[in-house]
Image (cartoon, rainbow, N blue to C red):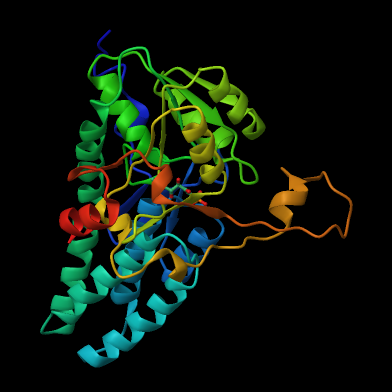
Amino acid sequence: MSLTSEDMADFFTLRTVSWDNGRVKMIDQTALPNRFSYVVYRTPEQVAAAIKTMVVRGAPAIGVAAAMGLALAAQRSKANRLPDLFRDMESSAALLRSTRPTAVNLFWGIDRVMGKARAASSVREAKEEVAAEVKVMEEEDVEVNRKLGRAGADLIRDGDTVLTQCNAGALATVGYGTALGVVRAAVEQGKLIKVLVPETRPALQGARLTAFELARDRIPCTLIADTAVGHMLSLGRVDRVIVGADRITRDGYVFNKIGTYQEAVLAKRHGVPFHPAAPRSTFDLTRTHEQVTIEERGTEEVVLIRGKRIAPKGVPVSNPAFDMTPPELVTSMITERGLIGIPFEENITRLMS
Ligand code: MRU
């Protein structure tokens, strides 16, 4: 069954983050799925707060958002000399860097914009170059995801069920998605695919965002409780696991949303292939897995569900937002440069340098 371009409206083409005449426009993901709305920011402080509170989330999306936040800092600076402009930008860069520690795309986006500014020979040129660069990053993100999607789509057979985790879709990128980009590319090839979507406690990105964007694109999906993952795999109801990533270190460890590791262990137990799908900007060739910080988020995400308390007051809570999957549980990694297989360390260095 092939879909027409009209069928593929919405999330096949939508922009989660965009540079809009010197302002940053984003879909407000905290309001989904109940309200679809945009917010517009004019200052780097507003963008930093949006990243921290997950108005925008997902590694590629926060990378581009942080870059745009820094472009706002450049634009608003009153500096007449380059060193003063750099000082203003570095101060906003420090704020943006402090928002979330795990996704390496955040740091990649900031460094790329800072590098563009530092290569300029006047304040005016720096401001123009930085604004042009974030527009390039916006376009590039969608292109890269489409390429990555095509690279992964050949793994999927007509009729397959894909298990994912969290939201690695259009909403986690500027557009199209990484793990869900692979699903979209397979759908564009005319394959009938079903996606199994764990709710992804505690922030519920699976239930709130992945189910929402798949439903809008009319891609069949079934929402399950996180606790049903092992059961579904044991019943043979999953053909392939495809997830996103926040950081893949040079030794092949995959950092992604909490719950990914248990999917990988269970997939191995039941002989189901497991693939992270991630662009070059998610690979960290400078670090090994021991050097990555896993974000610990507020306790309220665990003890409250949509504002309602579900645990006794004062109970100790731990809320790691990400986990680490070792390379021995990974079948292959899907990237815009093609598939990366074992030995991961060697092949990551070869393909991503
Ligand atoms: O805490 P979040 O919602 O920002 O976490 C997002 C994820 O873990 C995604 O799987 C990852 O960023 C990849 S998105 C293409």
